[in-house]
Length: 276
Image 1: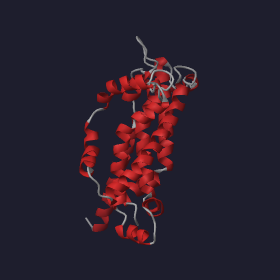
Image 2 (image 1 turned 90 degrees about the vertical axis):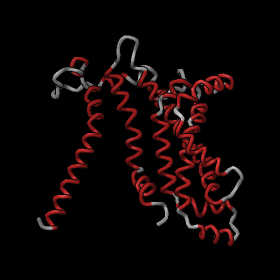
Image 3 (image 1 turned 180 degrees about the vertical axis):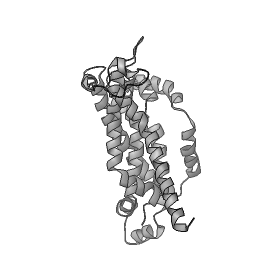
Image 4 (image 1 turned 60 degrees about the vertical axis):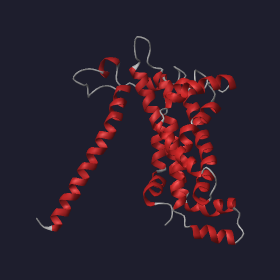
């Protein structure tokens, strides 16, 4: 087989593998979507019913039941607040870890690594008691704050790697010209690491939006998130499969749109690096 034929064969195999990966990834979403527009009888018929009249009433009813509309708005507010807070605290911290020496720096870095070892449910009981005493239980502010336990270490660690790619000579030149550390961060690091900061914000937003364990324990009605609302379609003796699947599809859409618009920043930030 010639080299040209070999390259063509490898290209075909690569495309086939990519196609298989796409099908495997999207099929569960497709299956959930079909259940959401099927009747209760056709949803779990065996063999599966492929030709049916779609019913869209589930997508209208979820906004009127189980407080799904309010939960959707809560998730938007909590996600935005959580990401903004993580960036406000994480950007200076990541800069300090890269360009400054201070006592306890090594312990701080170790804490960033250890924070990933603890499961979420370990924080539920102490945070529940603390939030009851402080009046933060079932509040949007409380949820945005508690998510920093996991999102902030991730943000600092990821931004630290992006800031490390910025040549130290650029900072030295800025400091010689009279820039303060804040001005150096704003004028040098922000423009050069914009893709990395964007990618970090996107990944943090996805984690907050999809989180369930903490939201299930620290919210009740006023500030419950969209993931809790989706789980709420499961009753004591039955499950509203139409409503649950429709709510699941609706909860997926914002992150899909967000990721599609921000794909360029994710690719540049996570694979190409921030400094060209």
